[in-house]
Image 1: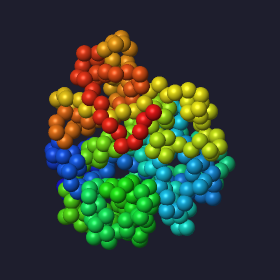
Image 2: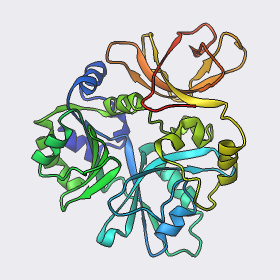
Image 3: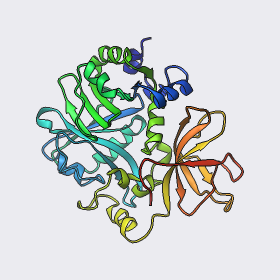
Length: 339
């Protein structure tokens, strides 16, 4: 079966972690140009006259001020300030009146139900449109040339959006972009992009997120972290000037009334086997009876072992995976400063 047919028909599209060997695909993402089947993402759409205010009152970022050319990160929290999900959010549709939220596919159904509880009398329609749209990632030093060569616009600035009749391009950085395209248009687009870059599965994209310090909530880590533990405010995913949203008081208190005691860090583990799953505990030899952190995501590293993001106690110096005598975490720098 062709890859695009798998993406269209698989009951568990999130299983497409790799097309070939994961280590080779991660190495390709680390050193060159790749086109990635982002089958691990799903999409929610909010429509209606009150959609902007509705989302603004629920998410951690300013949505009412989101312009049609802007892309933002945001989170949705419980009343206790614990993240249920993180999103990329942008506007599209006629007059850019629709709001799209990109998130892990295995969370879309649950999040649609939880967000739907807040609609009440608002003029909003919220729908899981994961089956209508496909997401394709392009990464590498020639990302702009690859996209423009495929007839797609490349946004001029990071975290911005370009719309064409064929697709919407979300620019994350000068070397990374996500293309949102209607499912019927995926086959031709994939063939074009795959002729210009190495085709990869979602694990390669997750490795890029690990490299860039971009954590995401998984089913196993829901309600485990306040936004600052995931460094969400450091990647402009939290606004401290907007009004209330679920958990806002706790998020603000964590920001202004005390140092966050746990933060997300990047690390490498020299280990074999399968990558540690999100939610795997991390321990410190200094306190072996109590977990000192938790894995956010992990993938094979391009040179072996595993690269991962983990939320760790900021006061710690040494950490080990799964137990106090497990493989040691070798901390690596993030592309932004963590206080």
